[in-house]
Image (tube, rainbow, N blue to C red):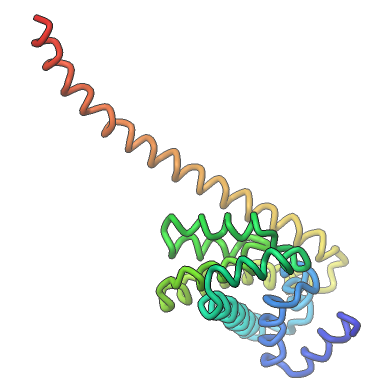
Length: 219
């Protein structure tokens, strides 16, 4: 089926169709989500519709994330790894990536989910290991909704702002996505450096306290 025609068909259903497109985007990688969101933004008529579209796509994307969470929880670790090994390559989910996403949950579950929903590819599949690990559902859903809102809002708003401007929404969407990733990486790096700077004095204190004792022993 022709992808543009399919999108047009869903758009005829109004906000319900927009929400269904957001759900489908989580399971059928037609093209990058930022492209879909920018294209949807170009079809929005006014500010009220923009706000409603942001909510509809955010709800749809969250439902898609819950779907992946449910699959991971239902199938369990061994079955999911077997499926990823066999079929993951067809949907850009390598076993190495799946294991990296699983390892990411060794940190704060809430913020890992929020940040994961704003990263291409990761935002689709991060819910799968979350389900396998049986993370607390309410926390996961809240984090997924927040992250989805952060991701969807700028692209829909840009698409809306570019109506009739003649600019290429795909190219602009790519650079906006790249900028978001760079900002996120900078924030994560800054937090890690901050934590290390706090941890370093704590590690140094026992050594400092041990020094006088050692001096007395050799006195």
